[in-house]
Length: 332
Image (cartoon, rainbow, N blue to C red; front, side, top):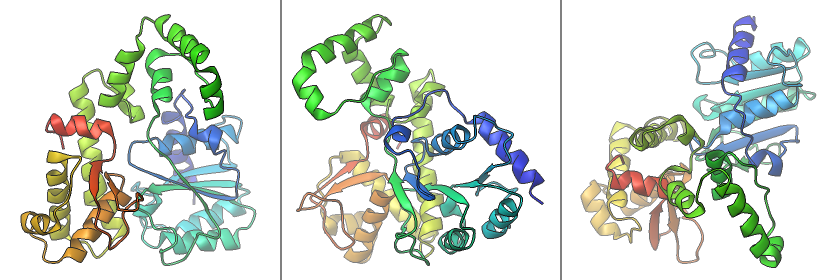
């Protein structure tokens, strides 16, 4: 029976429907039959899924046409996602949403079966940025459209912090009308008793993740950020890469601590192996790739792209400036 999951779905739809709608949902309306949102913890994947679900159902949290399923919730634990979807579909359901899908063992196989068997059901899922859609037990790359979600842009931060509404602009418009656009935006900001440079400074320190609005104390924001990174390493990476163990996780955390102490970091792989006590270079490079896939670091290889499995990065950065300030505050 789905009664308890419907009740759980209603609670989440009510609780996590935030008033601010990110540009992500304008850029990506998630109109395909099978969409997957991936991104760091805290960027707003759950809110985006819930806003999409409600907008497709007249903002009705009691709708029977849509079902939101938090995969990592204890009420869902032990149940087959396919069986949940099949029962929902047989009751006339039209849209099912699986949040934190990477926490479910065998997620790719069950989503493939749902997609292939329940052909009138729309599927929306979210998961860690480290998810390997193409390399799972079942390749979903030809079925699902994958949308990476970044943190807030400075424009989005301005909207939230100053309480105004700015429009997204294409580069051509900015180049041709930058003086008038700058004047209009600064005027709107100053009408709210704010200053653009002060907002930019704040954005660099604590404006990348939407949950900044929940804290008056910046130290609490940094603690939450650190907890998210720790959960990414200790929980998400373990879910995605089952060959990792407690010893591996300790070494990955130590590796991140070394990087955070001197980012931007120019890696000396021999020195890193010694400090982190990793026996071979291949394992070290894999750990760096896991951190990048999880959205914790950004690396630059010689070709200017991200880090391949066996490449040596030229530079390693923390993923965003908020992490840099948190590291300076010794929260990472």
